[in-house]
Length: 396
Ligand SMILES: [Zn+2]
Picture 1 (cartoon, rainbow, N blue to C red):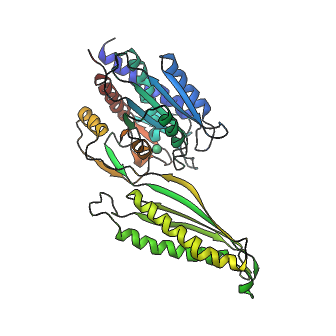
Picture 2 (picture 1 turned 120 degrees about the vertical axis):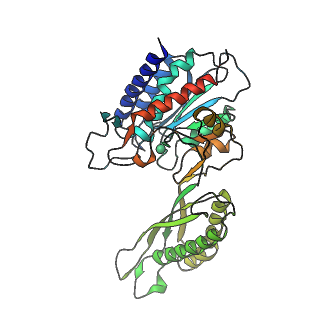
Picture 3 (picture 1 turned 60 degrees about the horizontal axis):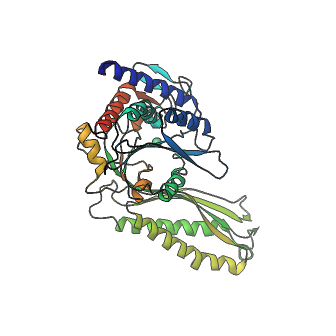
């Protein structure tokens, strides 16, 4: 087959696979087994080995598959990483969000750009890797529930540590128009629950108002937010340069004349450095446990303040020298380095020593939106990158 035909065939196959992937309704939190089976089948057929990791009830699955090097060298293995979940769909789509539809060189469908397009390209290219004289391993990492604060990836990362897969170059194919993203802030989400004692509003001293203690807690958060501004690193690459903190909601109380026994606060912080998240949580917990809670307990011993972690997506830190970024630059010629405001699984891989870059087809502008699409040319660009990686992963 000529090169021309070959790349046309690859492109068509990636569109076919993307169409199949979109038809699996893998909204975060839902069962993604059939999508994982589909991916695993493609990879097993070409000789890849794989293992799976699960959530507690095995409803949601991570897949990690490997095409082994034929001539192992000291080159770092490559990890192609994508999340298999998509965000929910709201009303107003012009087409069925779970049926891929091509119009004007755009492929529409939920997950087309975020990020089944990337997964489709890697699966379409996999047979070529398996026929290549690879001198390093090529891994495929497909996770569940990234969109809900990266719930799947940490389970996979734990297994990678056990299996000693802690070296390598990881490409997270989130939609960046194939640009190189080498840093983002962390994203830590929490809900704090207050439980006091209900009573008649005319006798405030006989009750413990969960709403009032929650308000003081929120005030503390706002006070700590100022400290985060002061703590901004001088050489910060982010906008704004400091860690942010936001109160998303306060919920509690049933009537004007009833002391509220329950209240909860939703809040999040986006740290520019991990130390800020540690500092913030330490100060906040100290305030809750040493000031607020004793006061509550004095009136009602069963009072409580419980902070629940919704998700802690670690930040992705810029590195002065990154094998992952250099690999992409050498193949695409793009020497720029950008930061983004959205969170990814990148920090999790980086944390265990894997050189990581975020780079993938499609635009984040179209992600999470009604009529999400990917421009077909982006898939071609991604396939070109995968071909470049093949050239850098074989010796002739
Ligand atoms: Zn994504």
